[in-house]
Length: 359
Ligand SMILES: [Zn+2]
Image 1 (cartoon, rainbow, N blue to C red):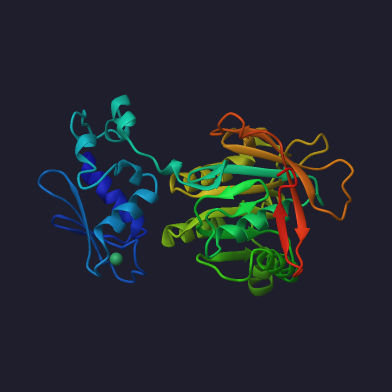
Image 2: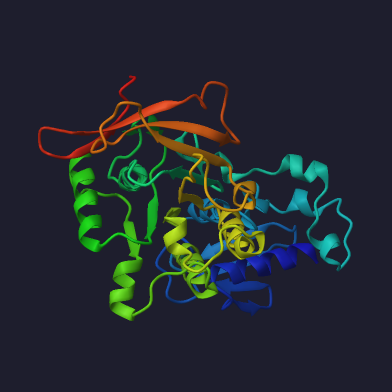
């Protein structure tokens, strides 16, 4: 019962509800190629193993890795050819939600999670939600633009963004709530230049509210279900995108009362849904007058990292020279959470680079 339900869930997630049931399993969308028909056959063998075969010839190992990368419910696919067997044996079955989906502590101990997949050390990893907050003009967008650009480069691994090192590159969706396209172009091209030019392994996709409003008449508003779902669907359809940047919370949630818990609740649920899909999200937010992040305290509850950016004392207002302070860091090792400095410098070619002046 349980395993059939799990397979159905996986098949439907992959095909966004369009998977076709067959006598021994499901036909669904292959996550490893640009699958316009349903090429992936998912079925359970008599031994209870999951078999996934792509009619287009995608490699089995790639398919398994992709399914695992997707996170829940794929985190249940622990390893190799028989992912479900240890999960399914020894369990007490009944058709209640608890009986079907709750797991025992020993099953939990045997599970492998993709959260160990790091994009940027020490804080940006799959299934994490981070907030970067600062006062206007400090340079928070520059920092996240640097992150977006570096993650999508041709050879990102080992690149430094200030004090932080890229461990794995991936596709990035940057949702911008207020910058004019000309500003975005100028900044991103200067940052790109500082990193060696416009050579990318993965896409940096820019979904800009100003641009959307010019084309459709409506800005992006994350308080509306429609925009949240469109973004979720993008990550479902394109598993090569693993990082979502929301710049910034205030401009993307027009009309929301930041100071109430109920207003934040649907957005919070959405962020958790993205986390379950394996996405790493960075929220950019304004600091309030006292220097902490603005809005209701429930915004902080599900965050894995909170990084406050402050202008270094004595730095000029036209410089981006900041101290990054970890106010919260769920998976930081001792020493990783110490304050670090970032400085934006211009190289001889006129490109911009974030460096760590302490190093
Ligand atoms: Zn395929």
